[in-house]
Image (cartoon, rainbow, N blue to C red; front, side, top):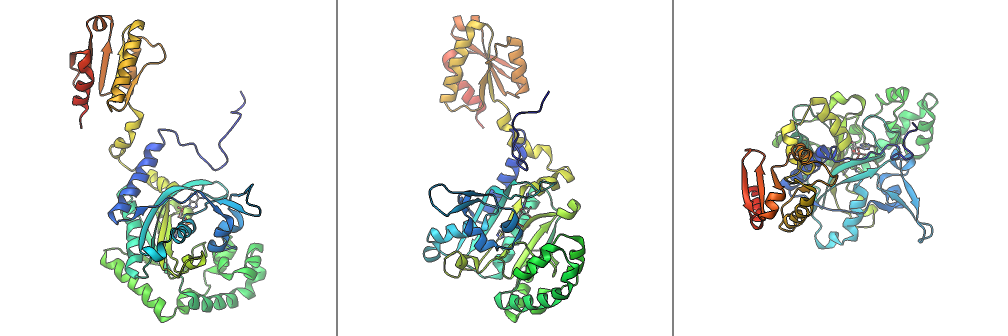
Length: 435
Ligand code: HAM
């Protein structure tokens, strides 16, 4: 037989009810962790004007130069829209557009939702993936950087990845530091260009920092001895970095100082960090983030310091699977949607209308997880289905119950049965199901 006529686009997944159990666990743990630190949810659109990303992430970044899903707009001539490849630029745009800089500049926000990058799909990389991100605006305090790193770690710990994580920390310096660093890199790379890949030669003309992201092995080896940003740091950036490390120590967090770590997006200033799960190998980053003190002004707002991170669900799920976590018992509460609380059984065909009516009454009374048979199954098969769905209660109506205006309520946990007046079924079920 031929395969299905249609498939989900390459690099995307269908999330079936069973798969959403783990997704919901990741998402609700994200919300609970954000709440612990008083970050509030923000929901910008999934599309933004393309030039928002070109401007903020950098034209030469991999994301902008190769990975954007861009669509022309029909009405607004000349405008193209891009499915968001990441959340920070859109959130910063919203922060400015919402008038927060003047009204309430200090904001701590989070988001959970899909991002889109036109990448080659492979283990841990998808074209549609979910991120949990936080963005804090309006403070340059190194303690806020530490809070954001701590929140990221707390998230993974709450999921059950404690003990296996590595936090890598670096700084990108401020604008003046980066100029010094850029000169040092240019001087170092210039004599190597013949030995580097074609992409690197093109990057050299446009943005020397991008050579540091190259994934080609020969180029990576040459990068190993490239000048580090540390030599270019001015006293303020150096002090900020030291203060972040000290603040993290106060929270009991130890981090790996990684002077060679660079991030693939242009907006970072000063602190950058990644949380890794080393058993995942080459793609071990579960999350990345840092400070971006110039982004708000880049997108049209006043100069506003900010810091944040985003954690990817794809890699996080792989890390959990690697450890055989979480304990299935922890997922139980996210499974409830798959089962029934109450299953209604009709003994004879002529009892089906009454059972159907009762389902309506129960739902109207606010009882959740009410279901019944729609496939003309025998009463025996209906009981079996109730079992399969894990129904807590089964209500049975047969010819006898119907003629006497009664129903039988069976508690599937205790196995006990009660014969209840038909008018008393709804209140009795509400009583039993009360949490
Ligand atoms: P990023 O490092 O590009 O940073 O992405 C963060 C995380 O998203 C990665 O560590 C990875 O787990 C996940 N991720 C990225 N691309 C894919 C993909 N194609 N498939 C699956 N997972 C992926 C950012 O996005 C920044 N906006 C983070 C940030 C927030 N910085 C400051 N605030």
